[in-house]
Image (cartoon, rainbow, N blue to C red; front, side):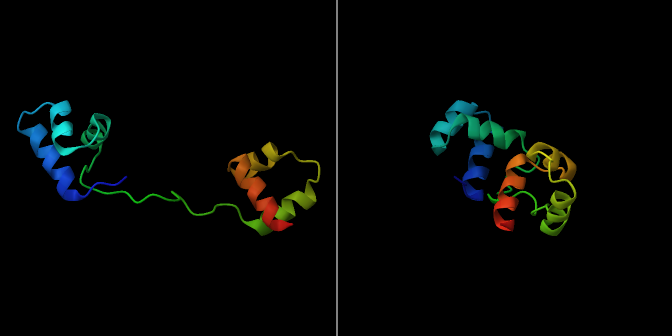
Length: 97
């Protein structure tokens, strides 16, 4: 769950004024862990959007060419070659067929 900038600012101001982390979190209605994560962040008021962190890095044409050149290659070997996770190769193979 994402909290608004106003909520973040309010709880951070409470901590800066001397209120304990637990008490500040309780007053605003968030967890203490969430508050600690905000305090550790470079910009605690920045709201990060969920979703993919990087674009799809596996070129399907290159994958197909590699698989044709190396028909006995394991999923792990293919993943290591392209620098992606095994699941990325598996999903790409599903889309190739």
